[in-house]
Length: 500
Image 1 (tube, rainbow, N blue to C red):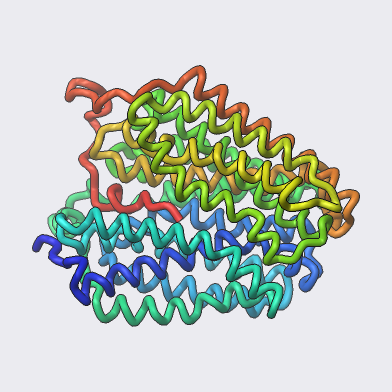
Image 2: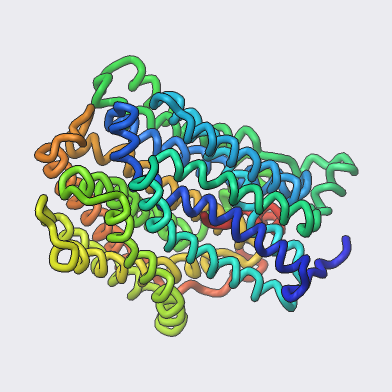
């Protein structure tokens, strides 16, 4: 296999970077504006709370369940090819979202959109990793990360303006011109690449390197069963046949997933030997808890500020902008701090600061002033997250041997999405919000305050985990350690850990 040779200053290098940035930007943009659109689409489609939950969670479910498989497909069949398929798939599903005439159509389209994102997300970074000359690779990935952050930051502006001026449908239609640019740039400049070791072992008839389709399906069944049970229990009843069947599917799927992954060993999607590292295990529980709080907060605050405080979609989106800005500015600082003093203090203080911010935001009322009532809590919440994100990512990678960095990062990414998924599914049940209660200010206010109390408690639980279990990660274990029995990192493992 020839070495990657694209240089950043050449037309091909710029075009490849443009394709990756715009593609990931589509995924990030949808992630930041859909919550803001929930009140409007709910009113337009006469949606219930469970419909709004599935609008968010259908996308997260498919992305969390299939993102590692998407990376593996790119390694086997060609990263550019699968990337292009993901772009087209995601765009077609976006159009279907915008054309949906009822909640069933919208949820089905969101499921399809999440599956497309699972192909697109790992590819947007893996094409950079595989295409650029080693001397330019770091700058290319850094530029990708920076512009991806910008797309996240402008999402509330663009999405809120489109919702207010036109319709919630346009946040999905916006992906069409962006995808057209991605396809033109990718077809013109992005070189094809694949993991040649996968092709060699396949050609030689080895059974060691194959897709873990069964593990992927079982993981999806487990997440889907639990999500369905949590979302539909208020409407159907906790003892209804459908809910009990979903609970059984979730539990059995989870158990079967663990058993299959343990038995498959080297060919597993998730090598269970990673969990011999207690730090890796604890950090992923920490991730689920922290991102559950984040997911629950963003779901409730967007609906509350519009349906109770009477804010526009644009004002609601802009109100949360300081969180993104603080993450962009503060994450590198927090990463450097954790390098010097270790991750324990940032991972302890950060959740506490964010929890204080949520407790302040919990007191926001119908006549809320942004500067007096909302901004202080948003600033504290953002500062706390900025203290957490970079040290958490670095600690997860440092908790395992370097050759497992890709699969460790990929699993941690899936854990973060699962946390948001479970929070959006469970919190309305916990605070008694169902049906069309989100349209009634009194019911929504009580549910909002209860949900933010739960989110603050989750953050404090994360801080407690950090205090008790987190220490400075040790260097990779020597060959005599059990972890070394795991296989060398594959291209799939290196490239499937991108975050959207």
